[in-house]
Length: 220
Ligand code: AMP
Image (cartoon, rainbow, N blue to C red; front, top):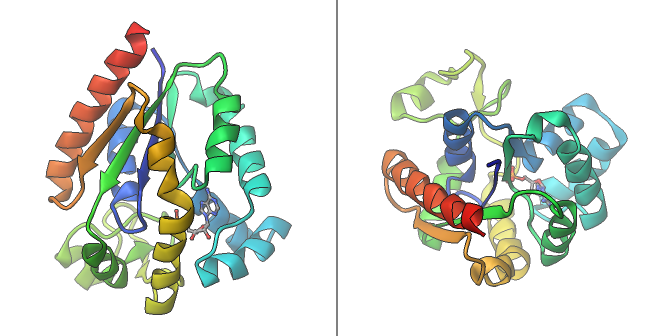
């Protein structure tokens, strides 16, 4: 059965890192709305130009734009065996729209990665990402070298990983995205994992959570 997975969690919880691993292991496309927006900014498209200011303030791009982007992406044939959404949905309105898009497809598996807020600020302030492929630096050696271990690109700080924008992103997360946990919690395919552990341990917990939830989803 197709694995239709969404990963929830605050900024800095490790969604991107875990999403990359799970997508590779399960051979499903990783769809990161943050990456899609950053590509649009780079390409200088209309959406990119409008999104840049919003992203730099740490606010959310409008639901209508985001739902249209995801709907178009989930209409492509490469999601037939499943997909992984990273960074979407971020509001209850987006989650409701996604439920509409999912009609007639395998049920959503929802995994929430939980990390204490103090850790999030520390992680985001120190985070380095590849300017070319968007991967996070995974080890202190890699961060020190400023060279991406995946593609050789340059590691840089994201323009929204500064203290003021980080605070705003966390406030937006609490107000707009945390309610999603309640939106999904009652579903038998919802799981939450402790994200304060090492990336390897979190990946193990993710694998168990995804297998368990997918099994429940398949039985329904
Ligand atoms: P991320 O890479 O997931 O941290 O996203 C970076 C920024 O892109 C966010 O702070 C938002 O401004 C914007 N963004 C990404 N995904 C969404 C979404 N689903 N809804 C609204 N804004 C988004």
